[in-house]
Image (cartoon, rainbow, N blue to C red):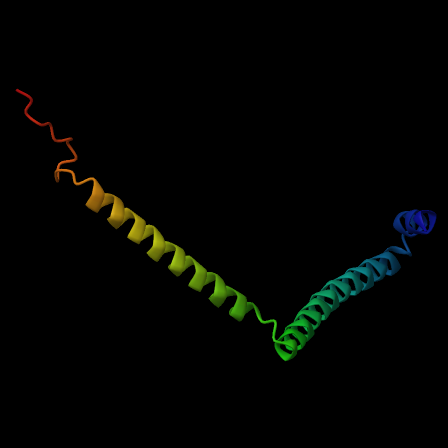
Length: 101
């Protein structure tokens, strides 16, 4: 194949043939890339449809994760409020000192 390309490249008459071959090759490669992208999109759509039919949608998983996150945040806020009630501090963050006489 390489010898054929070298012969066509050096031949003055074969220059139009080599240009045509380069054009056909680039169009073919472009078509392959585009078809692979289309194939990938089609496969992804089919996977999403099958997941929806089986009940395994990503949106449900994200919703469950958000619910867990909100519950964890509420529990953390309750713990923080309980800690604040047990150890009250001044609004300036300075520890209160008691008079010891």
